[in-house]
Image (cartoon, rainbow, N blue to C red; front, side, top):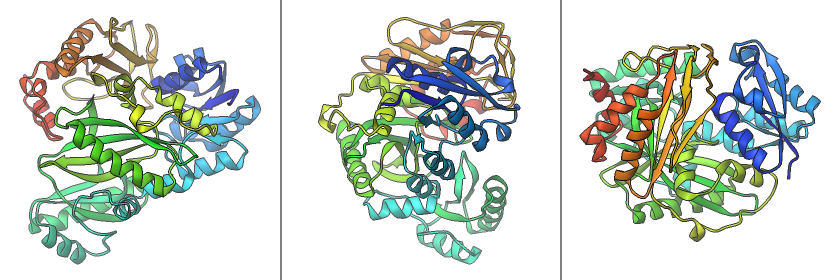
Length: 447
């Protein structure tokens, strides 16, 4: 087992990894920008190294600085968290080339799944169901028209190297296809430096269902059930549940068996999440994230397994200490992503936190690096806390979430807490009756 791990991230996820390391007796190294000198992950780590000025490109994306920090502190492995360099294949290669262990998948698998077309090709070969669409990148508008005529409108033009909703445009008819094609390619080029796009059938009322998996270096692959991540605004998740209100155990087990068998053939290792659209009782693969997910706590709550500790053990070469039949799903968990944004306009709201109180009680977990007096910097993602609840069933989980939201206080900055309070009171949410388009309409009808 490693004796020291460098955490190449910041905020709540850096603190989350630090806590797992501390419980395993592993010393931690925090890296930080000058803007994060007083951040909680820096204050609690065993050692810290400043790696650059506030801009992410000069600090948290500064590969040379991160590797230098690992070298001078004697770290043996690097955990990338999520975001930043977590799905950067070149970074994973450089970590290994410097004699360190990258706590994540291989660079080849990161590269494969980072290309949406390559990922779909791989999943098709493994028997994983896909959304109908083009077999690969489309070179001309005429090719796009031909595929659209086959799968029928509406269709979705998507960036091959995309993510976060960028480079995605819907065409409801042939008249709209040319504009969608042009805009999607322009956005893809600007965001990812690659204007390659492909086409899929646009599903009008799907749910976003994802499956958490873990694989070791000894051929063992397991899944930890599904998460329902359908509550999204502009393709950014706001609330997640485990399990999904619309899936039963049989559907989960069937999907899990297909996915784990496929990843075993692929030789995948460490944690990963496969994302699907679900409509009319059918699953369709859309992408795979080769890292720890923001919403991993809801899975941990229903399975009772620390996924970060498992990542570390697998990276150290240990075999999983359990089989699929040993994993038990208990109760229901819900996670609210609390962001430093205006709850009505979603304008960023960085600044000094004058008061902070985290809710508590049975079945309540808060992953946050906030504290009273901390200044939320304007340079990074607006996520400041994750409020997670667990209860024997969904109805009780909603009641517990309502109570926890009423207790939580973040003063001095605006947050999305009021929006979450509105969501949990909505009858459609309470009934589990929502799709990936529901939240946009909900926000639009704000009082």
